[in-house]
Image (cartoon, rainbow, N blue to C red):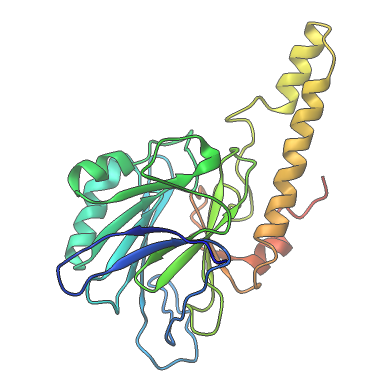
Length: 280
């Protein structure tokens, strides 16, 4: 029996629009699309106008990227923001308005230790917007998602993949698979996978060096070290199984960059990522 987890949102009396959070066993039919990244030249062979409107936005103090995605072919132009920052909420909402979009979701890849999310502020300025975060984050949001869930905006969607390590609740959002979905696929990796790097693993727990020093100083057993080693090992495993198994031309969009990069690909990171190409 197919089980669905869903959210319904009526944007206007006619047409009535339903947005679904669908379990990994669900399926959707989506017409042929052509993805044209607004910061690149990636396209498919389809001659249809792009359904996906995409913008990459930057907050310079925390070097954070926010991503705006919208279904441009739908009459209501439903949109979502990935990893909004509190300091740039007004800028982002002004862009949503300029483009004639209907913002329905403000979603986070994880609880950020290095900047404050703008989801709460967005909700005060745009009634009806729902905040989303992973259940494993143990954070407050209107909706919590788990691996395999689908976040739909019109008939486009993002699939949730668990990539814990930087924090226990880190997830990656990936555009849907199939010839009728946007191509190349896009992965919004948060801090799990950065361009040529990865996020720190000592924000929600002490790093291995700190724990070793504390244990040795107090002549305590090293069971805590084994715990941290296990977390780090699982982190590498999740990146390889949940991100590096995607098609090599999948576009990688991280939550931060400190060197001026804007986008990478799974294939590039499998070859050149100095941290995640090494063994444990």
